[in-house]
Length: 323
Image (cartoon, rainbow, N blue to C red; front, side):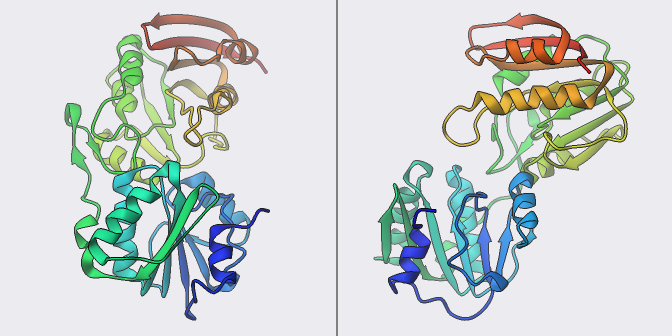
C-alpha cells in the first residue's frame, strides 16, 4: 500500500495525536487507517456498503458521531456536506484533521478554513491535502440545515444525489411507467423517493420496498414517501435479500463510484434486479444514452425493449429474468 498523507504526517511528526478516541468520518474502504491505534478508532458512516466493509474488517462503526478527542474528516464530493462535516467534527472533538483529494475540493475547503482560522499547517501528497487544527466554534454556521423542500416539493439535503432538483432521467422513467404496475414492487437505489412516489401513484401496487445505501437520502425518502405501503431499507441493493422475489422493480442506477463513470456499477444493478425478481418479474429502468447496458439486460432477461428515449436518456422494460 502506498504511503498515505495521514501516515506521512504522523510518521514525520507533523501531527501529534493526543490519547483518546478517534472518529473517522466517511472514509472509503480504501482509506488507510493502519497509522491509527485500531482500538481507538470508530468509523462514522452513512453509506451502507462502506459501513459494512469497515464492520467486516473489525472496526467499530456507527451512523452517529460520538464525542471524541480527534475527528478525521475524509472530504466527500459534496462541498456542502464537507462543510457540515467540519462543523460536526468541531462540535464534538478537540482536534480536527481534514484529509481529501483535490478532485473532491479539499483545496477549496482548506482555503475556506484558513479564512476563518488564519494560517493552518498542511501537507500535500498524492494529488490531495491533509490539514489540521484545534476544534473551533468558528464553523457553527457550516452546520448542515435540516432537509428542505426543493423542486416539486420534495425534501432533499446536502450529500444526496440531485439535491433540490428532480433528476431528468427519473422524470422520464416516471412519465413512461404504465398506469398499472405489479403488486409487490421495489425501488433499487431509491434515493430520496421520487420514483417511489410515482410507483405508489399507479394502480395495482400493494407494497413497495425502498432500498437505498445512503442514509441521508433515506432520511429524505421517509419525509417524501408517507404511504403506508412503503417499507424503507438502509442496505446495499447489490447484496439485499428479500423474503421472496419481487413482481416488479424500478431503478435509475448510479453510474459513478467516484468522479469517473463506471458502467460496471449499472451492470451490477441489472444483475441484482434479475436476482431479486420472481420468475415472471418485470423491470423498468432508465439510463444515460451513452451507457452500454443492452448486452447485460439481454444476458439477464428473456425479453428486453427500449420503450422511451430522448437526447440524454433511454428507458428499458425487461421481464422474465433468466434462471
